[in-house]
Length: 76
Image 1 (cartoon, one colour):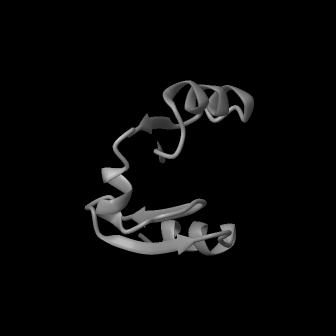
Image 2 (cartoon, one colour):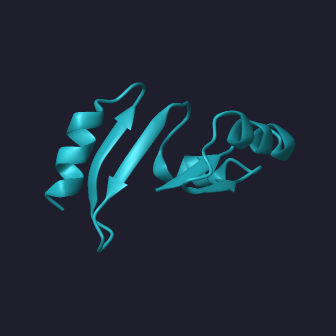
């Protein structure tokens, strides 16, 4: 899992990681917002699940069902 922060300053992104203990996965920061544009997202929360070989398995905008994500990941 990789988190991708774009809507905040670097300081705000670091504060978010510390406040919500999201240290169990890598967090990247992109001040340009180009990464989100590349994947077609304009707001958060949003998620994309990829298979180990890079095939997109699912895409969610807004709140998403954890059970659905886990099922897709288990079947990848």
